[in-house]
Image (tube, rainbow, N blue to C red):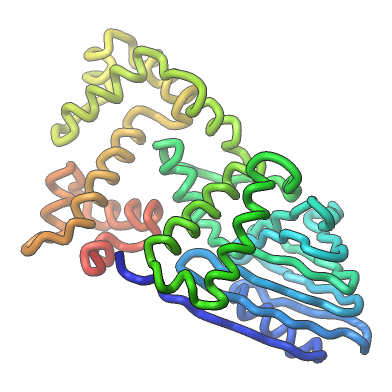
Length: 321
């Protein structure tokens, strides 16, 4: 496993314009604007490790930070001391004690810090959370994730998240975790998976259903049939006939238990096999060869679908494997 690229960023001072520039750098697609009185002070340190950044922030005095447009990443605030109030879509959400806040990248937001205030923050790309949910549910994810802005940090996965993030930050800050790329990888992965469990979103009930409920026989037979015939061209009619049900029944089963269609699920399986083969990086392997092997004839469409799911082009996966 190759080491992750770690980027450090620190800023300490009293100038609101300088702070605005720094926060804009952390969210490059959403310019930040800072308003505060003359007595503000701040100490911000951010460490980026792959798809996640951990931010430690300390503010003195009262100041307001505005992000006026959509950004590529979501911000999650885990309070350590003091109070802040986040306004998203006209709704005010306090962040203090065991009340965390999920700031959706798709929404404009205003955060009022009432100093002294300390918190840890996570910055995670929207596409990364979408990809992870797709992998967890074993189905493509479409549309908004609709994350709730409030996270309960007192119980369950929220409690674990608020305990783990300081460990991740401390290990990155003093360099300890850089000595063990495997440990760093697992801590980062666990942090993001805990967030998906702790924050309520559009697919929370689907995660529970996947974990708790067995698939209907028709859906299970269809999945098994797809896997057994994965290299062959398959039609919905053939899959339904092999399972002994109508096309309508099969489509309904996948819609209710996989939140997708049978053919979209088949493509999902094939993309996973392509990804696994490209990750091997065997000598002489080509993207075109692998794509055709698993039934992807249209190169441009295949590359777009692959990038949407994995965040990189198939050629990039082959190159870095």
